[in-house]
Length: 258
Image 1 (cartoon, helix red, strand yellow):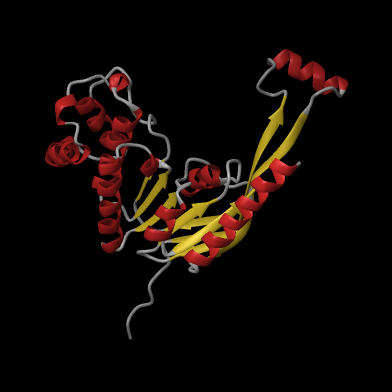
Image 2 (cartoon, helix red, strand yellow):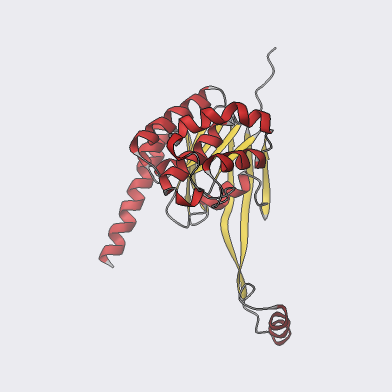
């Protein structure tokens, strides 16, 4: 008998809470005074509430929802950058997460220096980076900017470099937050092709995108979030996208009439 395939990602009833209020605006002394006098203003904000889904190796999940839906917060939990307040997340395999274009980069270092820095942060040796760096540079199309400081790059160039490094690492699980929406049209097509290659190799990919066309063409599963709550999850990609789009348009029309 063949051994059953283990899920790549398992999310069970996950909720993520932030504290809002006076904590960041005041010092320790003022915090103690307000707490003793009952004037401390702190409340809980649940960015995500009761999220559950399972992904198998090779799945490409698209996460959709309007701003404030909890998409980026969920990705941070999946990438192990933060822990859920409630629930459990299991991931099986090496994770490469690309959540913020400038994260892991030094604005004063060159493109080449930053590529090696990012590689080191991902746990790769200098010998390995020596081997893969030419491919990273060629894929990003930044050969003429190799010695430029990172701060002089456009947002599109930064996106191209970050994606080129993240995708070249050959991860088991690739997590992307809106990175394919930035950059030139030719690179969007190139990055989508690269994503298909990664998926074809058996990697599991999680993508947040405001482009429903991108979600429809790339993903085999969709998670729809609204104000932190799970609306739908499943493999009916076209149907879920249609219902989300209708809900979004309906909400926009209602706001215009109000």
